[in-house]
Image (cartoon, rainbow, N blue to C red; front, top):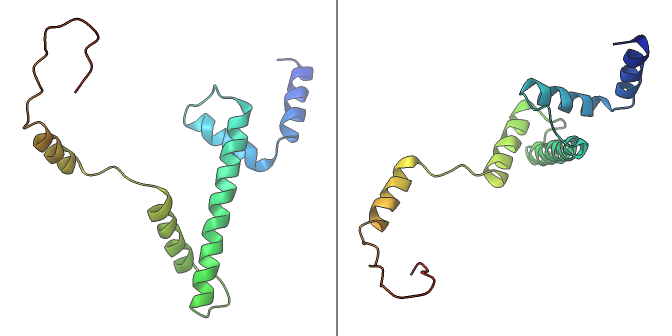
Length: 121
């Protein structure tokens, strides 16, 4: 790589905000190398919105507890509330197996021999 190319890369990275560089570095570390530039903006927007929401809720919890500053417990409670509200986890495997067992007790109807497209019942 020539000196000109190196300086061009350094100049280009100087125009990218520090937070965007961090997002790009994280993506590189997990093996994501091919992405559109808009992905970085979307991840930044999500991160800013999430952190702002967590800190706003933590401030509400601290005010409710009549504290002047936000502490770690306020942030932990806020993060837990965000997880419960925004992100869902799949049901346990045992629950899904039981639902499948109950549903699969009934056999499928027999296929009628006639012309035309066969659609599920």
